[in-house]
Length: 404
Image 1 (spheres, rainbow, N blue to C red):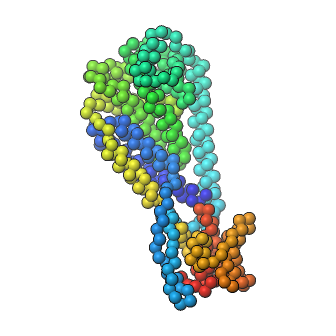
Image 2: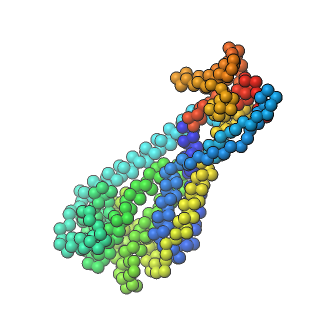
Image 3: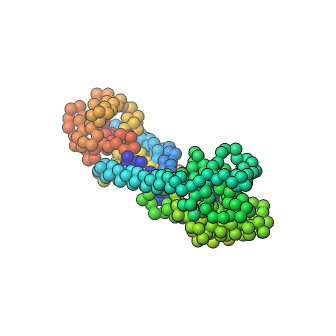
């Protein structure tokens, strides 16, 4: 549990720093590179938040120990990346983990309840569209975009703006306002682009990352930035290869829904209207799309930094430093001593046998028995990251060795 919480907090801090730097960089590069590239690059950072555990590196510096007045190399296998103090009170990590877990559950329950009420409200106040012109327009767009799955379309009095909901049962909801044929074409294509790109799945992944790091204030503006880029990149796809007149018509279609602010909102639906500030950015982006290109180099750099930071901060040494001594893994010590080791899990008793010396001890106890003789250790054995950690000095002295 201690290792999990340390990994989670480390990932949260490191990925937050990367996210903030990335947000600053995108503000300077927005005029040169497409929103689509920025949008999908964020996915790398989101996965970095969801998967706090990192690959382990094996580094073997040499530790010298004296055996019968002869210096021998004592290999240390370092499997992680930063030295951290061992927790003398495991209960604090258990409390922290419990608080974190309760926070995750409350966060997800709140969003689940909100989404449930949202779906029920839309189902109550919506009607299936039977207008042949609208259905024909939708089918033509689906063929044009090579979408074969059935997508239902409704008109909903509670929907202030067009939206797509339903990860497994996709539905498009339109507000109860008169919309010109050209504008409706843009609106439907916008929502179909969301469907084809699996944006609702992306939103689910962002929601999971936000839930895991609910305690981190940085994840909320990150989620908002991703949501804005989702709509802006979708706009770019709708007016791709279009001339200025078509873009102007599309902007008019967007402005047409500004006065009908959405009354319903959920994290698992698209939002044609995302607020005045978002609309200003979208309009400016639509008019400046020409000449923008995918930032492949930027995406690769983000991947490199994300996974590079993960490798650096995800590697924690197997050594644990206490004020009164150094702890090392049981397996490492036994291999270097050439001793036989037995660990009884129910009683958490460790037995080490070499030649005519038998050493026994228990996890959490400062008492060590050497051939029946009781010896008090400076620091007790501990369990960290699923491994038994022993005080190196007490063990080596029990077998007639001394660490330098």
